[in-house]
Image (cartoon, rainbow, N blue to C red; front, top):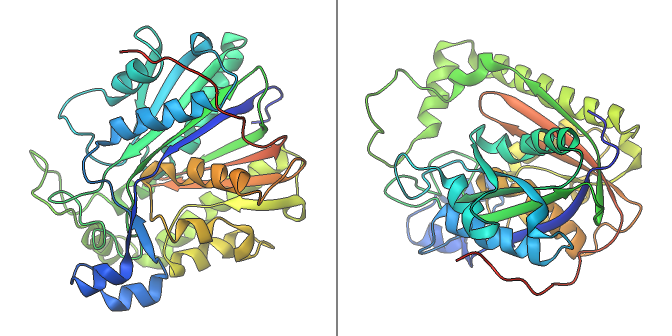
Length: 346
């Protein structure tokens, strides 16, 4: 989809302190072989706040560093990967209430790691339909025991905690959303399903690696699944670039999902012509996989650190179990806005 008047008006984060991979190895929580193979040096660890609470703080950060009036925010999408602190409870409504107010429409998006990136597509469509306004997209996850072992739940993908947020607006911003493209392959949902369904959540810690191994052993092997994944990711990238009338050579940087070195090398093979130093890998390797939040945090980092400047074009790449893959192209217009005084709902 090509977008004409959709802008990034705010980007916000709540990022807790890091815990080093070397310390995790010394404590027996992480394997030395995995550290050597992955190159992830640290992950962010939040000792107390839940995912929705971190999302609220990130949302307030995004709103504070924007010119958007909270009354103009017409929609809130909250994305998460893991437990949000309460059973059978709409986290999006909590985020909306404490970041915007009681009357804004709010929905949870659940398409795993791709939820937030694909949410931009949905939010932009809604803003066009509404003929103006702003939309708030948030993410928030805390990956902790007993449910998740951040160092071992998924091989090659250490998990980090945090909240992220993006404000999309039709009234201008510091980056312009030029295009989005989403490709689906629902036949790959079984990669993470495991052997069978259960009556209740299983006692932790979650072991995604064994589920993935079960799929490869019983449903066509690793090559078949990775080929289909590559086709979806490449299709989304090609679609976004075509809609934005942009070539790989025109890109200053790419925001990619956080992953270990082996998965990074695979990602780079899909990003023909882009080098590792043109991606957010150096940021991701010190933060860990932030669930659905890698991309919002990564884009904010590129702009805040001056890695990209006005006139640059940036590719954002997302994919998530299911499978969906979404890519987007942005044009940078300015730096991050200065903070403004705000009051928040009680």
